[in-house]
Length: 421
Image (cartoon, one colour):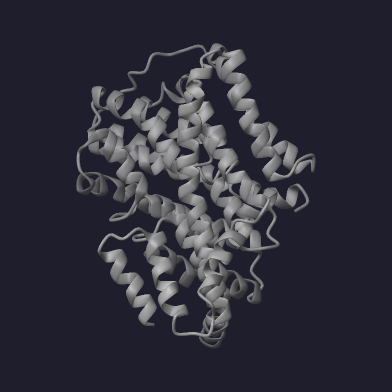
């Protein structure tokens, strides 16, 4: 308990999560027979996994795609599909996130790449900066749900035995449902504020031809994994190679002089995730050594007998945790505790994983620690408070989707079942 209080105190004073966990663990270990040298050993063993290589490779693929100018081609295609509807540019914002999700697999990358395009343009067409920023952040939650997805790979690493391809397939429906819910709200918002579709009609055929190559990338990635040709890590390497070849030799927009910056950004973004995985692996080992998950599991099973009530409890806890912890960090800490309990209730591991991932991704747009809100605010500079007010209805829509997939398991399981998972 004192070590938890120490970690909480350090977080309150702004100490980064990684260092807070390390110091709290060291304080705990000092009062046990465990050698402090085991901490460094466990940090390295926490990264000793072939599957973890998929994380920096997918990050690199996303950076290469961004630098190659893929974003503008995807936006043009989304514009050709939905730009003529009421609230045209905002509709394009939402559905560009759906298409961009198949490239980056990261909500933060989506917010950063698409926000720089849409927030200024939406303001020119009569949308407030606050709403534009909120919509960009909310639609970016779709990114980690539609494959490829970095959080899915990390979840599968934590909850051993859960199929990555099955989780990839299971995330498609929640991602599309979120997009449809946001799209309907955009229609309502544009109607109420009398904002017409002032997006120039473009040829769908020409837009599809321009966007065809980037749009085929997620098909190749998911298809090769589902057919058993490659592992997720190998698919990530293929994605990076594909992005490099397209940028340098097809579009010729990516130059050799751009590569150092691309690699530096990829290393920086990857290192943040990887050091967190390594440190939390140590924390989970100590928790297991102390039998904390077993004690929590016994308590939950003795007080809750219904799997539906357990899912409701998990959703409420994760929504609360999402206010203060980044999604991957929360996943690394809580999944080793919740996953075994879910299995003891007979809950499908793919269903449970999809619910957890979507829940924690919603946390990316909840203040005070919603990362996507901060990224969006760095572009619009209107203030987190104003963006947070505008994001409330969008947040509630995504929570409604969350509870729908929670209570209707087949909504996420029918695609994995269709492919034999």
